[in-house]
Amino acid sequence: MPRTDGDAAVASGGSTARSDWRLADWLAWQEQLNPRSIELGLTRSRLVAERLGLLSAPCITATITGTNGKGSSATLAAGIWQAAGYRVGRYLSPHLLRYNERIAIDGIEASDDAICAAFAAIDGARGDLPLTYFEFGTLAALWLFREAGCTVQVLEVGLGGRLDAVNIVDADAALVTNIGLDHTDWLGPDRDSIGREKAGIYRAGRAAICAEHEPPASVEAEARRIGARWIAAGRQFDVVRSDAAWSWKGEGAEYRELPLPALPGAFQIDNAAGVLALIEALQGRLPVGRSAIEAGLRGLVLPGRYQRHDGLILDVAHNLESATVLAAQLRAEPCAGRTWLVLGMLADKPVAEACRVLASVVDAVWCARLPPPRGLDDDQLATIARRSGLVAHAAGTVRDAISAARAAAEPGDRIVVCGSFLTVAAALENSR
Image 1: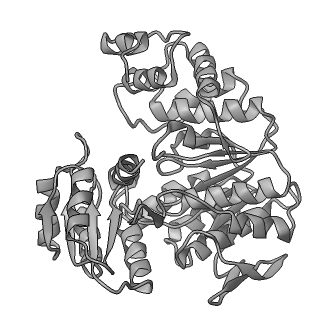
Image 2 (image 1 turned 90 degrees about the vertical axis):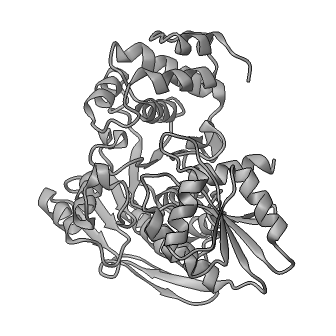
């Protein structure tokens, strides 16, 4: 991409945005504005949101967090409400190929120009506050949803819950999908600590939904401490599964013989069950019929979630829980030949644990390097993988690793690419 004036401003340490910047310029500048790539806390983003009038917008808000499944849950909830005829804003993170994937209105990604206009408004309101990259994105989504007159906004938490920028908005209903050991440096060393942080999205008097059947006690305890309306899987709602359909029953509604979610994997039913509890919790304000629920389930699409593409299986699994789910899905769909793995991971993830889980379902792994400072290089990853029981090869870039796996594969074999959003994104980029 040619260097622009915005690039020059970033390179020289400039702290003033320019009106002629393109989206890439804005994003590069945001990465330099705050010296910390992650800085949890609500003070900065709340103050800017108040200056822009974003917290008094009439939009109904559904907030979703969890270790895994929050992106597909947010996408499903948005799809159901859209099918019911509402104007819906959906905010996700991170993205795979384009920043625009994060912000969608009625299923259509925001344009570069629209996002740049939002960034300009935010920059004009922030004064000297050094907002982070994620705070800019969250505020941009809220600004665009307000400008578009959205009836409902579905917000996916980026990290944790209590101190994530999304949490400046008081959710009318909030969903925790599940609790796993991820981001322990930020959220705490155990499931109980992490559950308490994620339960920070709940609000007094409003629906506090948990889709995990056995969450840590801290999640319910926090909901009850603040006086939220606790709605839990296996208690206030539950499902019955079959090979071709599933049924959901809550305290005030029941849906029999629903179509399976279009995304593969038995765990998607657990995600969908939590979403239906979210939909039911807001039925009084956003009435939804069965046809919209069916349309949302059938139309559920989210790249990088057990996605078949160009002869590969792509999955963003990057922690112990998601690796366990991926391994179960591979066992449920055995292939005639061998299973080869292309793996690229970040150093702050439970790499050895994920490798041990995947070792039970793959025959060998080609390890790819991801960019520093967080990314492991291929030699480091291969060493960890071998210690975890895998036959591992250091293979260079993601593209190199895929090429090596393809060269080794024979008819009937399959190649799985996983370990990070960055790994899957590289695989998609190289096949375009």
